[in-house]
Amino acid sequence: MTKQDVRAAIGWVAIVIFSPLLGALFYFFAGINRIRQERVSQQRVLQDHDLMLIERLVIKQSLPEWPHEFAALRRAGDSIARYKLLRGNSVELLDGGDQTYPAMLEAIADAKKSIAMQSYIFDHDRMGVRIAQALIDAHNRGVEIRVLIDAVGAKYSRPPITRMLMKGGVPTARFLPTAIGMRLAYANLRSHRKLLVIDGELALAGGMNIREGFTTEFGQNKMTRDTHFRIRGPATRQLMDSFAHEWEFTTKERLDGVQWFNSVNNVVQDANTPVRVVTSGPDRTLGANQSMVMAALSVAQHHVRIQSPYFLPDIVLIGALVTAARRGVIVDVVIPGNNNLKLVSAAMDAQLDQLVGAGVRIWKSTGTFDHSKLMAVDGLWSYAGSSNLDPRSLRLNFELDLEMYDQQMAHTIESRIDETIETSNRVTLESLRSKPFSIQLRNRLIWLASPYL
View 1 (cartoon, rainbow, N blue to C red):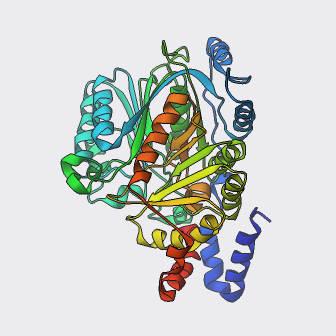
View 2: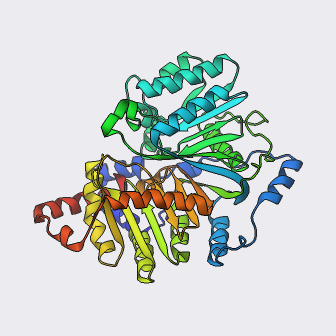
């Protein structure tokens, strides 16, 4: 009565029928979406002057000199996402930890009133300690700080960084702790968002966790690659609203006031990038990220470029990618040749033939692992953030992405993906079929568990 996907309903019914006791217990913990039953207010209170300013910044009509199909994409975004597309932003791509972590440290050091930080993984390693100490120093000089770390992600290192932060007086919370009691029922639902908001004016968001292996200083020639974004402008209010919602959900503390939500009259001079924040998760925003990707695929006319470390699209998304390719759109998808999650890599290989056979160009990158999640369409529109194109990101995780209508940013993302393609190996039907049958069978068996990898 509650499942929207007939395959999920059939699967759970089969599990319970064939194993009435263990199957029912497994469904009780992993199959029931209790998040939707938790109600927390979605928007902060806006003053009248803020409402008027937002109204002026919302893009309601076709973007000047843009193809008409992007007006349809903007309308689709208005109906899919919680937030509206706002003009007056500046967005800068930060390439890897060598650019992102110094930007974080500089922003924390410059904070005057507030710092809101959220991460899936915040390791207690040399880089994690460096950032944690910067947060403690900011707290000691009177800056209001809130740090939210996913409960599962917090366990990636020992001892967890939460101990250092709390010992230093920084208000810190774990999203959906699962150690005791009924919270075990939430173990499969994680917050995958990565966000830093300073004084309600500056934000850094994207795909990067806090781990020393993302820098040449510590990772050296095995450094993991990734991308993050520095945002100024009214979109920072949307990002802060997203954080405040999850903080209230986790701690019941409501964050309001100018120290957290600076006036939306934060338009950056000489910058007019339209940006929309897209939140998604197993609540009222279920499937928002997948819907945005599919809407973009439906309007693409020339070229779609996608980079994803974990690429396990469901049959609906596969259909959208294949349809775009059959319409004559060039669809390039870059995935890691050397994946950090071997089971996910095997499951990915199991379904690539469905895409390659229909004309989608799949590329396996060489070199070190790249954790970036990027998409660009026709050199005009781009989409980036924390969402992978796999069942966990599209249905189970809480994710945070940026939709950007900016030609320069789209070209920057396209250039980055094209540079990776130049040194990548193209996947063909022949290369997939040449693998030993035992490997193909193994991959298909692992693929059966792909919704939970």
